[in-house]
Amino acid sequence: MEQSTEIIRSRQNRIVSEAAKLTDRKARERSRCFRFDGYKLLEEAVRSGLALEAVLLRESSREALLDRLSARCGSSALRGAERVLTVSDGIFDRISEEKSPEGVICIAKYIDKFQKIVTIYNDADFPAAGERIVLLESVRDPLNVGAVIRSAAALGVDRLILSADCADIYHPRAVRASMGTLFSQRIDRTESLTGAIACLRRSGRRVYAAALDPDAVRLGSFRAAPGDCVVIGNEGHGLSPEVLQACDRRVFIPIGARAESLNAAVAAGILMWEFSRTD
Image 1 (tube, rainbow, N blue to C red):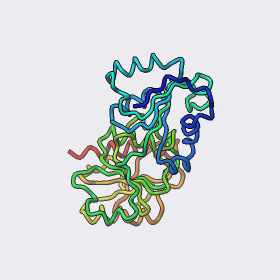
Image 2: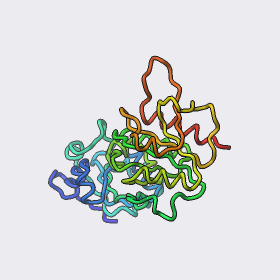
Image 3: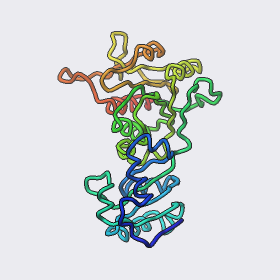
């Protein structure tokens, strides 16, 4: 770990400049790094063993943050970080993504267990026996994607499979909404969600499409079986006809007449809860 005693006072510093650029997806993909702000996410990153390229600490908050982290995670908590740097309050506040900055910004490497599988349905190890799997199609809001990741971790989902056009899981809002569960949740992205569904069905699993459809069964009117999967669609348009056709069953969440639909992340949480009750 490189821990500099210098206080960075220039927005042009290479690490500060890189942190600011990582709000842009193209910059993230070029560097294969992402950023997140705030103490809670730092603590979760340390606990999960995430590879940290840099930790930027606000000058006036530095000692309090290090003391807090040491008390909760041990004195060697940042030993794995490549660089620990102190940034002046003015520069830090200019690049922070938080309304009330807590005083820490982290840069981390992309997480190896997240795979972009173009031909997931040709993967001999997919699906693994006993895995609880939930699929997302075209969920574009990073906050929704992050919230789904958090619910999946809480409700025992082993693997999330995202279509390639879902929001970037490394978007700062997605990372923040996941509340650190992103660092340990298994996530795959695929160019062929219908191919993944076909593979799941060939393995003997039932795949439910979440859809308001005359042929859909009411959630709660049946008991999900171990291995059952569910696909949640886009916030405004639901699932595509191709994905609906690929699934072998459809399910709807009953809601009151005053609401037309549910937020995608809320719907996903309800479905994951019900599909986790397989015992």
